[in-house]
Length: 450
Image 1: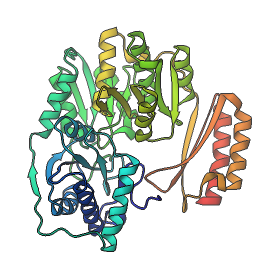
Image 2: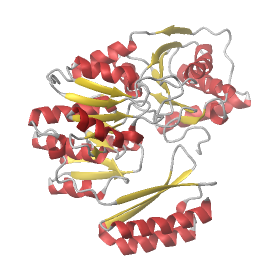
Image 3: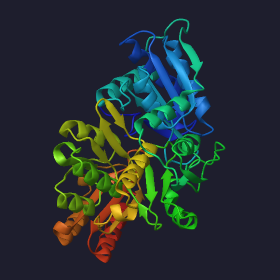
Image 4: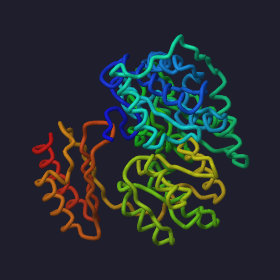
């Protein structure tokens, strides 16, 4: 079925408007409540939020629908998305909701939904909830009697997540290690510095004074390059920048160079293979991954499975092929360890630090050999998401680029799953040719779709 509410990463809009108008958010809660009631009565639901000022109101609006269906809603307060996923899985909740718009500006917000295993809901579940939302909006969803649910607060949720992280790295000591950390004024502002300090690191922290309006404002993954000067100034071993809900991380090595998800996947995959811990000698990444990563992995006998953009597709691809490592260039890296799935910026950074400590090599050496091909990405605002293959002029421009680049380049045209944008990406060995093809396709996209 076509989707009216869910995008690729939950439901997202400007807080209080459009898809996040108060009445609609309450309808989401009612639909979720009814969907849960079909499976069990009195379900336990965990909700956490990032630092946006609009978060508490959205919890109140959404929670009203869940409580009306007789379920138990536990408010964990400000928590990173990975913390909510972890607690949902480890503490046997039936469902978890994160109120966040990730890397978007403070005016935006959203709702992400996770099942009892801590993973995003399957397509079939989201489609069933979509149907319930439509019924709630139309007034045909049965209305429960007197609300019988329970709302409670959990002030210790963050502390229990930190204890879990401690258990994941029992042998990692960061004594004598200096780190620069950017928390994006987001959900990781308290958790990330606390976790790293517990492991013994010396920290220089920025972006950790959220005021409800400054999330992602001049801080976080989009400003990771600014950490380079701080890393060199403090003689740090590593810089790390989180996004607003802390499920992504980008790194800066000791020389001040930015290292993205492709670099991290290359380091982690080769380390795991050397230790015989990479099942099938394969990983999963998206069509946006740099060709240089694929070449590097092939040189080490590691297969690279490609899937559409989005961490849900990465996780699904991993499950399909039995891979235990996957991720995106954007810094969202996913690990699977038995029934546990991790898509956690802090956890990812600690895994990289673990490799650095075990090999006694700085990150700049660990990434040696991962030659990144020139890659340009331009976002074109669009008025409509007409399928690319139905825009003849754009198809023709793409074919010209692909014929010119041959086997040493590629073109990706895709719509954003959360914003009205067409992403035009071209990659190849020659930057001037790459730029020329990007410019040509951007002009066509503006004319035909903008």
